[in-house]
Length: 286
Image (cartoon, rainbow, N blue to C red; front, side):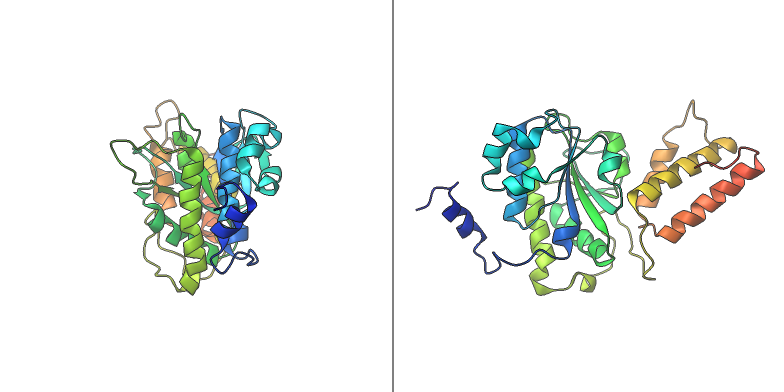
């Protein structure tokens, strides 16, 4: 029997009839984002998890070891996925990691007061399939090994997922979590040969109905600029007190996250904000 880390074992693990299939569709448009990973070994193991499931786009946000893709422990744990590890994109902030992304899924282990309601991975990836059908990139976002994702990070994402582990011992290693989600995504993308567009259009992980007009979805950075513009307008109206915001913007984020914003809808909201600011003599917020 081949050693678990030997090339023969790796080939056997992929021998499902599609070991040499070309990457396509969601496999090439899905980013896996690790926010502030602490342990190089976890980064390497995550790269291995992605490659075994046919993915290759790994993004690292402010890793504790700046050149983690060259770290010997990371390389050892990648165990043949050195190409995925070496190609990892390192960025300073989650906003940079999500630039150009049209939909993002935050993985969290704890209940949040604000943000979209969490879904089990199998349900969440069905929503990912629907988003991929609209074109553009999507992202799965994983937090730091010790603290997970911050509330700000969660609010920046479109939807939320939670792995329903054993409540008596729910501690899941970062790379294991990546493996679970990448496995579920692989099954969903291969779709048991069903095209993603044929999936039901009911509410997904965030409870959002999908656009039926075929209009392009707004990207994460477009939506973030909309929130800044809207917040400035609400302050100008004295509807929002920046000294005592009372989670207003968090609640609005949750409201918009459920809607699956299209680019034109974002432009409408920004147009409203622009005119409010003009009427209030505050000029235009960028």
